[in-house]
Length: 125
Ligand code: HEM
Image 1 (spheres, rainbow, N blue to C red):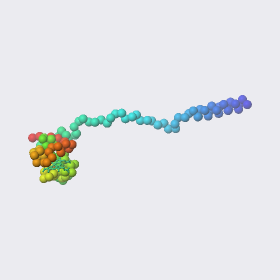
Image 2: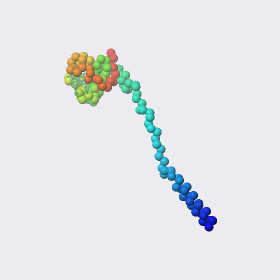
Image 3: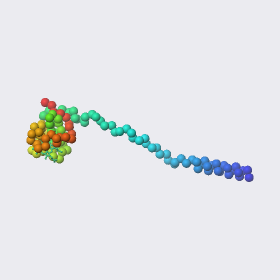
Image 4: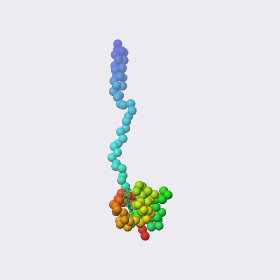
C-alpha cells in the first residue's frame, strides 16, 4: 500500500511538472521596432557638382539614346525623362544647348517649367 501511494504521488508530481512546462514549442523572437528613420542624405546628388563647358553640354543632345541636358541661367538640367523633350527636341529647340534667352523670351511658359527637373551641374565658361 505504501509503494502504491508513493507511485501515485510520483505520477501526480510528474504530470504536474509536465503540465506546468507550458512554454511554447517554438520561441518567437520579436524584432525590435525599427526606430531609426531611413537616413536622408543632404548631400547633393552625385554628379550635381559637374561642370560643363558649352562643348561638353553639346554632347548631351538627347539623340541616339544620349541624355538631354539644357542649360538655363548657368544651371544644367536633365530633361531626358520629359515626354516634351523626346529625342532632345522641343518645339524646334534642341537639347545640348544654352537656352536661357529662349525659355525666357520665346517660350510661352518661362523658367517655371524647369521646376522639379533634375539638376546635373552647372555651366562654366
Ligand atoms: C517656342 C518655344 C516653346 C514652346 C511653344 C514651349 C511649349 C511648351 C509646352 C506646351 C509645354 C508643356 C508640354 C507638355 O506638358 O507636354 C512645355 C514644357 C516644357 N518646356 Fe517648353 N516650350 C518652348 C520652349 C522651351 C525652351 C526654350 C525650354 C528650355 C529649357 C523649354 C523647357 C520646357 C520644359 C522643361 C518643360 C516641362 C517638361 C515636362 O514637364 O516634362 N521650353 N513647353
